[in-house]
Length: 323
Image: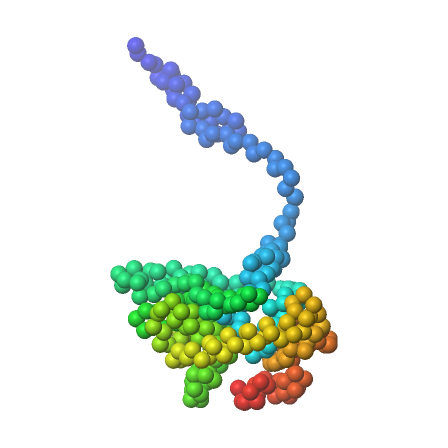
């Protein structure tokens, strides 16, 4: 069959894409599917995610088991303030949380990642040099007194060394670096909280039959650069751990002498407090400007505040030394 020039032109015209709206040519783009109208979604603009997340983070922290527990672990037994420990033991009311505990939240995330890192380190070595997140019992307790237990961050079996990760800001790292430059002994280079915690974990590992020789704090920089990190090391001393354990039992005795956890009430204020700028700053029971009672502790000594203001931070009010 012979196709004329006119017939061929008509056939090609039918096959060409139709560019007008709604065209049905073979090469025409398919019509967009109709989008059903959204239901129940406000017109906008959307509310701030940051503002909502801020409250959710506070609620999340308050709901964590660690925030509600009365049993204390090594990280809480090194504070110099007997009253702060006693308030935790009896479940005294804490001041309302008014902002997310963002630095501790980051620290928890870093600890979880470091567990993965040391597992990778072991795989690199082809052997188990590192023990990570090991459950440790420092003291079994007695009836009416909870055990002292916690999870150790890491244990270096090559060195018989406890390693505790700390995700820290610039101030803590600079204090440690300055103490080293000044030639201070390890016992004076870090806070009592950190030091006692490290030795308590050392005892926990020793209780598992491990040869503990050293305790170390690794202050991982909350910074862009890893190289801003610092570390502190001291020979393991079980006497430091024993002193913290005896103190723990002594505070239970003091609480019972004042009526016990259920009846102590305002008498909690009779247990000595050891106010300091660092200790009071993060204390969950601090109620400045009010008398000490079941509801809270006033915190810092006026002298510490006066020194801080008068020297504009050049002198540490707790040690009376130049910063």
